[in-house]
Length: 163
Length: 194
Image 1: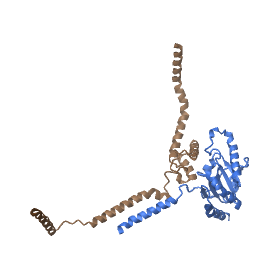
Image 2: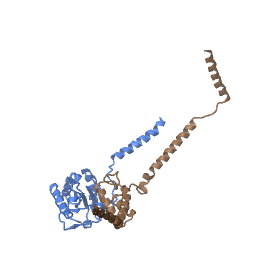
Image 3: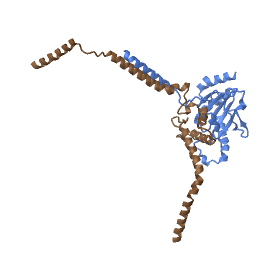
Image 4: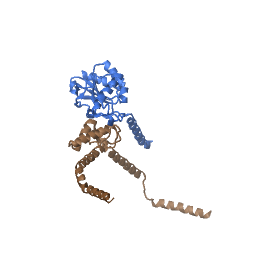
């Protein structure tokens, strides 16, 4: 029994001692792979899956998405830059694959349309409010009008008193 | 009366825009490849696996490249039209058999031995063409779908019209309908063949 415990302890110690060595041996490829996967996720999150169009390439389980992720991984390992990989995708599937389409003639309305609409809306509101302001003229009562108003009020009071 | 005019105009414009939006097909993504040279490839032929086919073999001819697979349901729908087209006229029609085996969701790729796939493609695709008729001048095998990626394939069937200089002039995503064939494809072929 004692010998068994000793063997176990020694085995554990041995494992603990060699732990560093094991991890040191594995760390290199793991890190490289992790960087690749991180870049893959970053790039594919920016890309639309064409089969299920409201999903990103990163989140889609479509067959084509698998193929394209594999393709991007290959490109990353071949040392291509993010821009080159984007270009690879856009040249095949068009600007539509990008969730953030580039700024150019055909996408001007897409980029600035909402802002322009907002500005136009504010302008219309402002114009409407100004016009309404002008329609309601707010002039103080003249002395004559003041007297008339007071007379009416007074008359009303005495009338109530009598009844 | 006037105070209702502008909201009414706004409403009508909105309805028209939404109405137009409803008639658009979101699957119809304009291909950036139209107007560009057909991407080069070299693939083994289905009925002669030892021979290769490359788009440059077709230089000087107007031809069609049709992406298909036996597992593709819409291809079956489109197929009679292609058979009819092949009978009616002589424009070469090249079939790109796309991921015949690994694209089929019913096949577990883990159980397919790596060396077996090509044989399975030849067998399955050949059998399908025997059953439904073979409209293709020749078919090539894109076993892993790599050529499909270069052509921006995302929904089989797809059809490309390529001119004499090897430039893609049109891409049809999804099955060719009789309407598209007579109103767009045939006139384009006639014009390009001049």
